[in-house]
Image: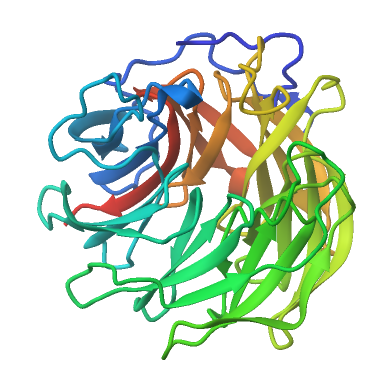
Length: 421
């Protein structure tokens, strides 16, 4: 589905000149002669999705795509089916549990891992070295509800999983030599008083787990407690322990969701779901502490309706920060009718942010966006309108040139990339 930007959409500007958005999106097989040289000839994209009818989802499971950056083409190679959670529907033989939503790859690109949102399970896959398709290795029950995010530790021996359902917690699973997952080794319970939102903040809700650039510390934004926790992983036992101090508070009702570290400066940027704001922090890697520097809206000044921020990322050169905005008051409403946006912010000398502009995602509910391996392109997953939309980065992200819809797939929620061998 294509969406023409409305007057609500603020166009991304560079040096005062608006960057016009494409009125129509190229098809998944359209070629673009202006693609920058130096891009990898072929890579693979792994797209997670929501699948349950309870969520109103249309996803089929994990999809594997062959991506040609030179021609702007996404070719579907494989669909790994997942359950739709409806007992009245026949489940395909060998189907995964529901909602393989967020994914991660090991650095070698030989293993893929996914959480199963709204379930209690995590799955491991082997990646074929030649053609990029995946094969299920095993699925492990973590004993906690709604795992929503996961990351591998720097040694590759531990998978760290954020479990969102109250009382939310973070767990570790051992990664065996064959890539399979063992049973839970460590559990971190998160202390604090729930925020004031009576529906969205009823207890601990960790939504993200990410290691800082040194690999020493884990940052854990918690939507329910209005805190960002800092923890350490024991690489021998898999135990997790809070730092001292173990967290930094946000303003109440912020709903911390995801955090991104600057690639070479002692800075971190937090996107907050409930207020749709972005916080800037000074990061002390030696002490493992965050010091607040700034707070500003993730949405355009013309945005007056309900909105929920979702994802955040820093450009490869560190000059710009991106944050996605989803219209509506939560997952139970469809959002829209206008397309949602990605805000672009320039990183100033002192580390704070200055808004540059907002670009349309040409769809609804960009739960996820991320940079592909070259760092030259950004792709947004519009969960409600079932599209993956691409952009080329210019001037380290100050300008985003829309590529339009590059793929259509049901309820996409995350994308990870692997270079072709």
